[in-house]
Length: 64
Image (cartoon, rainbow, N blue to C red; front, side, top):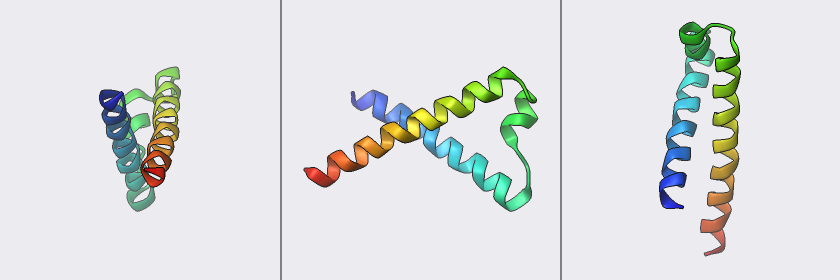
């Protein structure tokens, strides 16, 4: 389970960097690399799921 958490954290960090690029420079790195395709949508879905998993990890550490 720890390796899944680390993978999800990496995806969440990458997602945060992409959002930072969008906010600061109005540059979407994912769409620049993959275009407006199904691959871009899949990447956004994976990052979103990883974010939800990280929320669960956060609450696990608060309870402990």
